[in-house]
Length: 339
Image 1: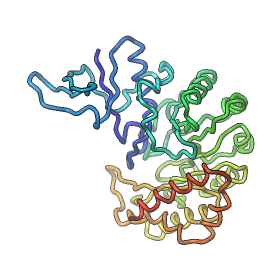
Image 2: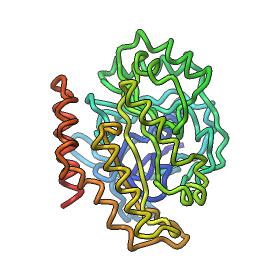
Image 3: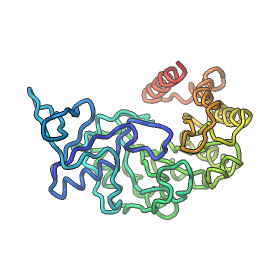
Image 4: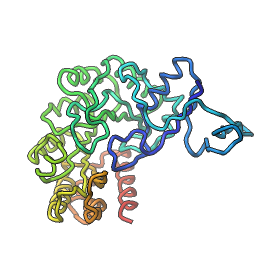
């Protein structure tokens, strides 16, 4: 088969409410699988491969050095197909042009995404596109080899985009395995009690925690499986020297103005105290009824810039040029989001 992959802003997103042009690692692994099976695989995007009407069916323009070629494909793929996760190879980052994806909460550039596990060991959050997916975890040696390959390709940070990074014995063995691989690791993590000091010493940098809401009623309605008190684990991670990133959502149908303000104040508190280093917010927009009047709070998280203690903590965190560049990128992102 001749297969065309056209990744877009939703190709790696498990949350229906937002888009992001990040490296679609799962799709890249599937593309590599087809290539390894002997199929002809093309990896493009809308800038390089454009649909055009043509006699005889749907064709795409494929750019050559000084000309264009019309091509017809047996398959055009924009989202992962759901091939058996544990049968997938490590993604070929040259074939899938991983170095062209610059979006992501990386401190050290260039960075890239990987995926250790399929789904999340909780897997019940109602807003998540991966709810109900069987949680499967790759072999440790295969993962460690992928990280070393990323390092050899010149990447300076790896973010694992599993719904939730594995914990328990697998995490313990992983911490032992990456001690001698000098590249920072970041990942998605649930608010659970872990040995965060050990994770930091092993090479973890940023942990992305889905806080979602400061209201227990909301956490129950979305089946988050956490309590408002579990924020203590984020604080524990921060005190261990890790750099938590928090994600919240506004617009839940049940929430009042006061509920949204409570979540906003929690975000600002965690950022001002330095417990969370960065934050993001999205709007709960599903086929169910959403609370449109709460959309305004998505951008209000960036109002934290008005507090001097927030900036004092940011200045204290600058230890080298990478820290300074990261802060500058965060400032520019914040300006874009409030403008």
